Amino acid sequence: MERVVYLDNNATTMVAPEVVDAMLPYLSGKYGNPSSIHSFGGDVGADIAQAREKIARFVGADHDYEIVITGSGTESDNLAILGSIAYYKDKRHIITSRVEHPAVISLCKKLERDGYRITYVPVDAKGNLDLAYLKESVDDDTAIVSIMYANNETGVIFPVEEIGEFLKEKGIPFHVDAVQAAGKIPIDVNKINCRLLTISGHKFHAPKGIGALYVRRGTRLRPVLYGGHQEKGRRPGTENVAGIIGMAKAAELAMEHLANIDEMKRLRDKLEEGLLSAFKNASLNGDKEKRVPNTSNIGFEFIEGEAILLYLDAKGIAASSGSACSSGSLEPSHVLRAMGVPFTSAHGSIRFSLSRYTTEEEIDYTLKTMPEIVNRLLTISPYWDNEKQEGKPINL
Image (tube, rainbow, N blue to C red; front, side, top):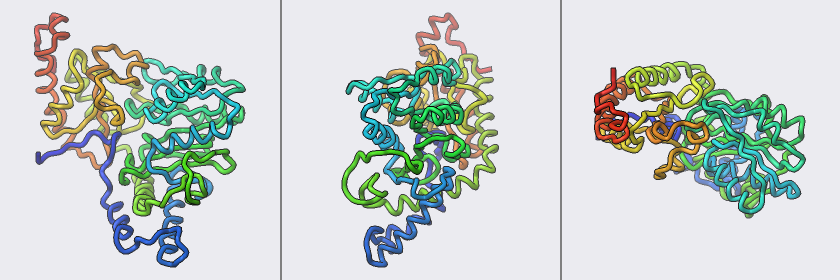
């Protein structure tokens, strides 16, 4: 397959060439253990310290020691929640939302089975968080509130600054899963007023398998792993040096490219408007305005999303039907179900997510390819026939 149009950048992005160049020395000549006393390892340790400063600037942290390096966004989420409740053992209430990433939802379901009381804050039909419900749910037993910055399926942005201000007054730890926001909108932990914040490198053109957790100075957090002294004992284990260097370089580049983010939004809007105008059975899932600039989730009624993806793949176009961490499930997205999206549309929903490497030619090719796929699937759809449309093509 010669042509590959990658429109699944909310799952993972390509590693930026500059990031690869920055990593290569640490896969060959600079292979010393940064925890070693000798200079061969000490020099690498100094490079990690500089990388940590860049990651701190990326999220607006005041100090580089507030950055804990992890292996992924999932690990960071787990460390934030489990590390917090391990310290506040007398508190048994956790607040999150109904549309969180599986890294948070699955953990909360497990803790619920263990006897914790979990409040799942609902969203409206556009995917916006019910802020009043969240505030009313807070009580003296609340150990932590964990809310995402931007939804990984719809791109909808949550009011984390308002939540942070409210929880700061209450003295309750606030964790923000910013995995889908990082590199797409500016992040400032001080404006958010969060104590903990998660990012994952592979969402902003760093390699997979490297992430970070911001831990505000003074935050009480127990480790969930035990071993060496790395990360000040908060996350032991020999450092993934090349990954850390790569994530720092990617963070540096992402901050530079935020100035040109409007071009990504223009291409996203061109794709979205083209699809919505071409198909009468297509509708946007999520708030049109309050979302990150690269994501568009579109429901195609009466046809299966998995079938659309297979046909797209045959044409060299990569998209997704939701979170890559729950792919393979035939159940409709828990995010779309929480929004009340009709079953006939939720099953046919496709997430298109762009990156700074997406081109106009790729958008044009996708818009040219989609009509044949959608109309072919409609002709064999029993739901479409049941609507007595006689399988007629519906692109205008």
